[in-house]
Image (cartoon, rainbow, N blue to C red):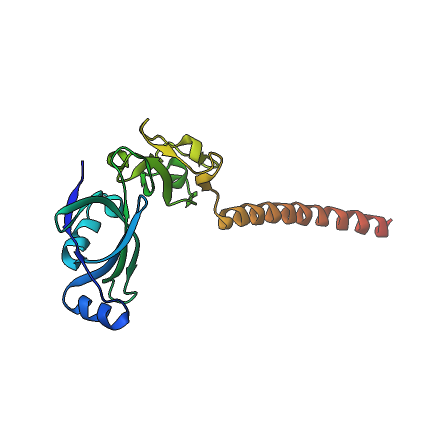
Length: 219
């Protein structure tokens, strides 16, 4: 079932000047395409779209676009924002069907504090979003990974992630997601301690050698 409804009105003018005027009126220029139908230029209310995108499912929220008397299921893609203000500049809406799987990027959330971090290690996260395929209604808002049990040297790969049976991860199963590593400073500290120990041992041997030489001279 759709998660949100958004009214979209057809627009005939294109270009930067008409788009700027629409934005000042609280509208976002957009296009609707996909499923073999003609691409449409539309406008949608900026505040309502921002509210939808700020929800738990974000850009993966299934939207019912109300275009006149017609309704179309869609996902917001290619979301352009003002780099300074963060306001919406333009959005592409991709038509979808409720019974056809879609591709989506789902955020990966880490939960807990790794045992290796408590012991002085560093947690390195390589992947922050997981590519999946699922029916529109089955796309999860996020994928959670519990890292509490991870110790120094442990790694988590894509194949280790748990997702519902209705969701398929499309990343390489061998891709590294998270690992616990030993800090460089910790490695250097251990090497320094070992070097100091060797120097101390040499220092202790030196007086003995000197004493032997002195005894030889006296004889």
